[in-house]
Image 1 (cartoon, helix red, strand yellow):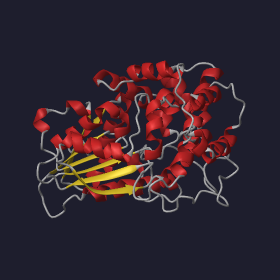
Image 2 (image 1 turned 90 degrees about the horizontal axis):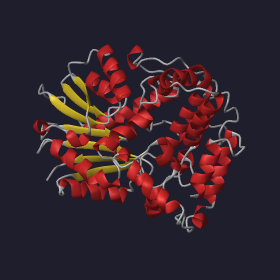
Image 3 (image 1 turned 45 degrees about the horizontal axis):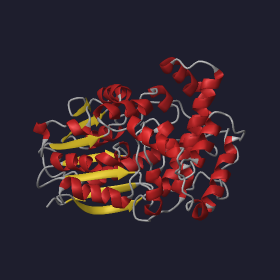
Image 4 (image 1 turned 180 degrees about the vertical axis):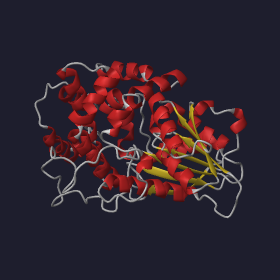
Length: 409
């Protein structure tokens, strides 16, 4: 409970600490992890809270809608304030993972804000400029990641036969738009539980002229229609499995198994995972992210992920490859942080006031500090940045796992 207590104290302003000092503090925690990890954080005080949180945030059909809405329905404009114009909200792929750093460390002018020699461009729709944009490295890195995922899907080009793709977790439509734009014979059904994401994704898909081939469904993955069984040549899911919950992981893979074509199915799943050595302690605790950022969220270890796939598909899904890109998340989060801080007054605050009726400086400051704490990082002690800087496995995503599913048996 110590890490959660500190994070909440920071969020509510009870700890006086400049946000620029968070990373050195988290690095101190990280350096002492071997000693701190031996401390059992559960107690007669924390256990009831953990149990109650598990009940409150359980990912039932109703609970999942509530949990997804709590994060993704904050405000589309708020997310536009720190994402690149493609609105991809997952780990990017960088040509240089440390290319934004000075002398191997974070640049000092964090308030200054974006990156060395660059200024933030106004938020744009994905279709306003689909080409290269060397002035926005985050956009380029997100395009790299989307193209990489598309390459893993191995869409056939020597056929005029329609290729059906199921995407579990629409986001704001960036992957579906790029995939359908790249392959005119691809037809996509994409699922979301966020009303705001669906609204903007529909708008962006219409603006791209793809409404006849990309359909956004407000649908839980567990409610896929019976008539979809075996109809999809490809299934893709990017950083959605973390919202499934431990109890439903095998169900998630069972649905992928049911949706895939029985002989020609390929699936790609990208997931944030937690190192095997920390998983048992992670299971016992409710951390800052689970309580305040992603209610109902659960990070599996790679072993847990693989076991769930085996159980859910009764062995019919086999793994073709696993690649670790976790180190790329550190820079992704740094870029989000700079934009969030640099555009807070211009974009984020007005978006909160318009969408949620946020009133009073104290309420705004609590929200700001909560998100600063998250994007500065939340790992064992609170930091995704620190956690994702660790090269956990080296062959895709101990922080971020991308599993290509091929060759059904």
